[in-house]
Image 1: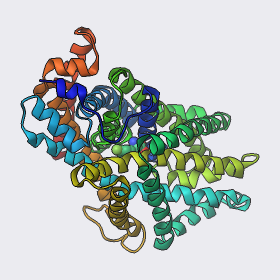
Image 2: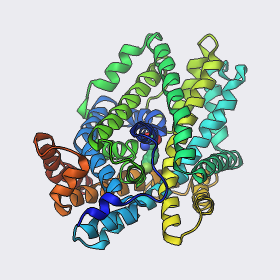
Image 3: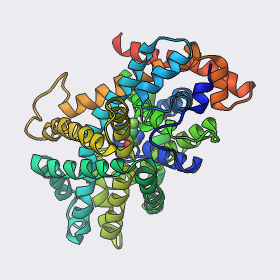
Image 4: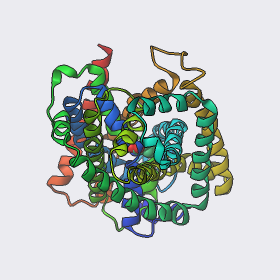
Length: 454
Ligand code: PFF
């Protein structure tokens, strides 16, 4: 019965090696979520206790669900919607499971619409900080410059458009020639640059305070919505339930170990988030800035930090280049699921699919562009439209998708198929995975959801 699964090939080609997959998937995971979002939401939710919950979520939900996703993608070898459907049908289950894949594609579409706007800020900052006089300004002037920047919808629109076009161009080139080649250059460059920054931060004198801020949990500072945000951040940061990881899994050669890949990707992602925190908080504390200042945090703090460094503008430029690279390798992973779905459903060429999907995403992105200026006062439950999109995707759609993926992988997928796909012997490791995905991950997701409602 499962012969079909063994034989199937993705119609978009394959990674050239398992390293290509690991690098592409780690590139998808490491992005603005680690360097831009993790520090500011950690700041908004009070530090250590939030970080602890985040780490727990990575281990009990993130890694097991990631294994399930790669496994389903590699079995299905199509876009997330059709992979879910064919794996379900091959295991004698309802084709309605495809809706879980559809939810993922929709999430990746919505996330990229705002992700590209923020990636655009990063690109704009490459040019801003390259001018030496910019980082020499007073902290207040640097803050004000950020506020003025986001108040101008035309600027945001310009940079958002540049990011979307660049992403579409790479995706139009395909898996090996587009995604793989880009990631091979950008990912190592990004890691090197981040390392340089952490070394600088360690010398700035406020490092110990940052370590304590990040690693000493004070639960009195953590509210229920902080717990939801920590779980949402774990999903967002690992790129789970968006179809991205499932999609990349579809291009994975059969020889690669899903378990090892998932562990390497998740640990690298977590490591980068913590490194980013360690690089950014010393600067925040050293300059008396507010850790809870929100999405502008790194755009306000880092130029100030670099202002105190020899060759500061060179390092600042490098930093924002790194951020753009990190964002870009994630953005391409967000575009691929909807593009693959268009190609496979409507039998259209990749180029055309890339144009259609990226245009739609660009258009929806206008909502985020204006939510920082013209429409800043339009609010739903006190949240701006950008915040609503972020909340809806990261804190609701992703955990919901993750819940169903977990349920599917152990309650509906044949046990032996799962074991063979994960390439695990029938031993402790496999039983532990099943136990966690069966009882712990879904229950943890439900408990967090219910805790918000009551
Ligand atoms: N994981 C990426 C980050 O942390 O920036 C964001 C992301 C990429 C989310 C791809 C979801 C996704 F499918």
